[in-house]
Structure formats: structure tokens, C-alpha cells
Image (cartoon, rainbow, N blue to C red; front, top):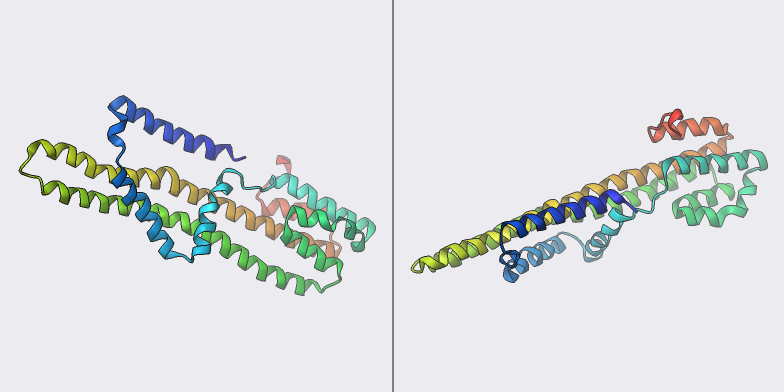
Length: 253
């Protein structure tokens, strides 16, 4: 569980709610037409920007910001070095008994190990890995792009709602008592758009991008490990390569 996402999002929402409660009536900040314009319009325009499947997959990716399901880098390095140790000690074919474990850890890693155990040429394995990696990177990048698009479009539709509210307000200039409330309602849509973008969408997009880059590093670590096993590289040398890949000093383990 990613505590920074929970704490950061919860704290931002709480501070805004407390500020609203202290400054006046919270009900004054609730306006259904403004929500329809900002939320509905932002979602609809974002849907237009992506194929439907990619759009809904991107929305679901918010769960990764709370629970990315990625192992600790040091734990992963230890695991991969142990696999290399077993291969060096007992031979590559001895890894066959653990193939289900490799797939359960990461299907990408399982596929690489399957090809290695089956005796495929290492260059062919690396070529297949790079092809699969391109698809994985594209999918992860699309998830980030969906939230970046929402972060841009929610404020835009908030401004559209404000303009609509101002036009409606100007139509009632003959009633001065309605100007203040009308202006307040017009501004609420801008507020909704700013809150949705800066409290939710932009932080989620940044967190998904962080985990996307980390995920790709893990995939690269799997490729390096398979190549090291194939070449009979000393597991200690492999450990050093993996530590360098993740930017971890040997003393930090």
C-alpha cells in the first residue's frame, strides 16, 4: 500500500473541507449544474481523446497509485541473484521446477525464463523481450496520459461553466440582489475544475508515471538477469549490475 498517496490525497481534501467549513456554509459550495459541466464535460472530452478501452483502463489505473503491486528493489535483487545462483549451481534446466513461481511474480519474467529453459538463443530472447517491453510501455504511458488529459480538461470545463454562469448572471442585471449569488455560482465551476485537477488528476498522473518508470526498470532487471544466467555470469557481478540499475549503493542493502 502506497501510504504517501493516501496521506497526501486525504490531507489535501481535509484541508480544503476545513477551510470551507471555517469560512462559511459548506452547502454554498455545492452546485449540481456546475458538477455536471465540470465533471461530466471533463470525462466526456477525455473519452473523446482515447479509444474507449484505453480510457476506462486508464481510469482503473488509479488503483496503482494506491497499491502498485511492485516489490521492493532490494528484495527483487536478492531474489534474482538467488535464481542466478541456482542456475549456476544446478544448471539452467533445474529452473524448470520454479517456472510457475516466475510467472506468478511477473508474467514478463516467466516468459523470459520459459524461453531460456527451452534453449532459445539469447539474442532471440532479448528481441522478444524488447518487443513485449514496447507494448508494456505503451499501455503504461496511456494510463498516465488519461490522467494528464483529465488534469487539463477539468479546469477547462470549469472555465466553460463559469462563462455560462456569467452569461446567465448578466441576463439578470435588472435585479442587483441576484448578482452576488449568481457570481458565486459562476465561480464554483472554476473551483471544481481546479480542485479536481490539482488535488486528484495531476498527482495521480505523476504517481503513475513514477511507477511506470520503476516498472520498466524491473523489466530491464529481468532481461539483465536472464542474459547473465545464459552467459554464466558470476551472481555477485549480477548483483552489482542490478544495484547500479536501481541506483542503490552496496552499503544501502
